[in-house]
Amino acid sequence: MIWQSLLLFSAAFFGGMSVFLFKGDNHKQLRLILSFSGAYLFAITVLHLIPDAYHGNDNLVGVFILAGFLFQIVLEQFSDGIEHGHMHTHDHSAFPVGIMVSLCLHAFLEGMPLAQGYQSQLVFGIALHHIPAAFALGTVLLHNNQRKTAIGFYILLFALMSPAGYFFSETLSNGGIGNLQHYFNRIMGVVIGIFLHISTTILFEAGPDHKFNRRKLMAVVLGVGIALGGFVTEL
Image (cartoon, rainbow, N blue to C red; front, side):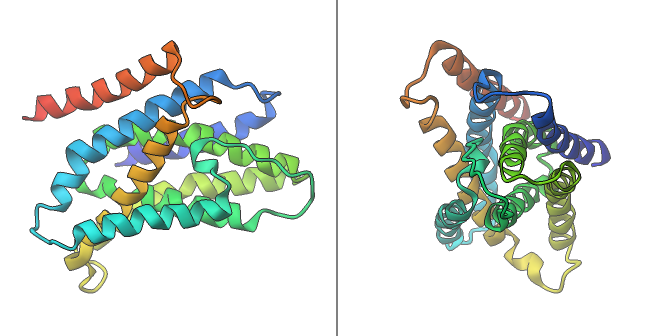
């Protein structure tokens, strides 16, 4: 899991630090990456995570999926939709605590499914998803007049969250934290709900007018196709 953790960390860290290199609000390539990763995450969730969560015959998993979906809605009241690559900037010097806390919690939960052996399917989708999210975080911090060293620290903290989520989930699934491994599928249900909300929101908000242009449609089809291809090879 070392190279996967490094990939997750690098995508988020360098995606956030790139805010010092790019100027302006028109980031078409980031939107294409976001569309691809949203479609990829949605397909992986439907093809892999949901079936495995129900593998233990726990009928309450669906309740936790709904709870995760609603929990992400609550998180976005504090994060301003940065998970989707939205950049709602505010011209003041107050540190956006709600955005930072909710985004780090979101990234931590996103790393949890990797403990179930989906590194090859999920790690690239999550890494790509974190590039525009980290860039949006850097943009918000920059517009809030944070110092460059402080911005670098907060982006570093965000970049560490998904690897930390993986290691926590690995410990949990192996029974290293009390008896919580018995509730692992329910915890994964929460993560699935978050994935469903994030991925569908990205897809529905494909453009300013909520319509797909040809390039974004190709990105979405490519994301679904790669996930489906990996699923077929495992049958």
